[in-house]
Amino acid sequence: MKITKRINRKVGDEVYWKYSINIPNGTMDELDWTEKTPVKMNVKGKKLVIEKE
Image 1 (cartoon, rainbow, N blue to C red):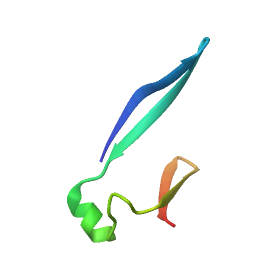
Image 2: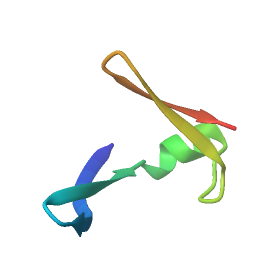
Image 3: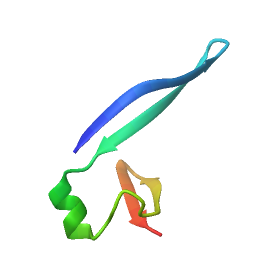
Image 4: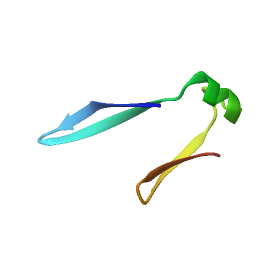
């Protein structure tokens, strides 16, 4: 997986970041996910947990 960080917007001195996670096609097939699968994300400890809703 590849994580990309880019600026989403700036408000004054505050910068808001947007992250994109690229998931390989084989992994998407294993999980039975599509591009429209609703997911929720949480940070638990040092792990990013992505769950299907």
